Amino acid sequence: MKSIKVLKRASTAIADATTNQVPAVIFHGDCLKLLSQLPKQSVDFIISSPPYCMGKDYEQTDDVDVLIKSHQVIFPLLIDSLKKGGSLCWQVGFHAKDGLITPLDYLVYDCLRLFPEMKLRNRIVWTFGHGLHCTNRFSGRHETVLWFTKGGSYHFNLDAVRIEQKYPGKRHASGSKKGQLSGNPLGKNPGDVWEIPNVKANHVEKTEHPCQFPVGLVHRLVRALTKPGDLVLDPFCGVASSGVAALDVGRRFLGAELMDKYVIIGKQRLKDAACGEAEFRPAEKDIYVPDPNSSVARRPDPSEWTLQQNTEQLVAE
Image (cartoon, rainbow, N blue to C red):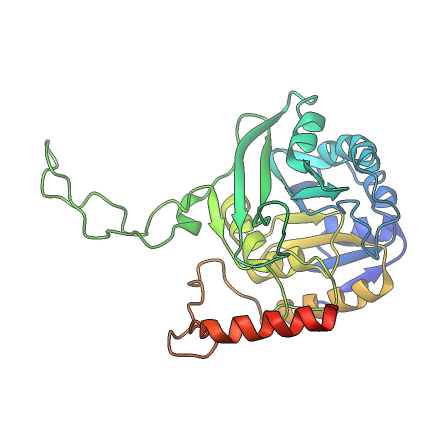
């Protein structure tokens, strides 16, 4: 097994990744240094979830205008590096400040629509059941993935990502195929609304990174939009979730990450993935439903709520 590399020299990282010297490389540094040196049309697939400017420990500002300006800089570099027919998937949510939200996919689309070669194929809604509980607006329970292709001809392997049909035994009701099975033996198209649990608390993938996206989300996209041996690029790779997905299905990976602690975690996860030992939750796994007889699934006695509220009121006074 070839080693997983972490390199601080962009030119070396690029050479090792693009010449198939190693299965995965993390460039330990600013992604702009990496992207500015990437050869044109050297990458098959780009996927990332950029910083949202929400004041996380890896961010320097909460100004959404900074996000727009940074995307105006990196998108031309990313598009140059992407091969014709390649795909770019950009996963974003909402920017929240002073009680107001900004849908970041709108801003991303505004940036990318300036490049006529980039064609929007899907706006995928990623929904999840847990998160911050809001009291003055509906709680946010979805983010989006914008899938663009470079040009009109592109790779899309639907059979690699089909899911179980609701009615696998359904048959044609009329016409020349009356009585014949109407579905596909491999399953149905997963659609553009994907329910995949976010990485919180007891999730099998949880690390100390505060905003991991699930491997299963990337895994489905990599299976559908790339071929074995393709090079996957993530310019904001964090703890290398996208790299885990890429290696698990026989693709190569090049990522960039600034923070030391995330580079260390990402390298170990890539090592595990290269050996087939990475733990992650598949996108197709059924959403957990608690036992109705368990304590957390049973509705408490109303008197318990009343007692708790009275106690909290006394403490507040």
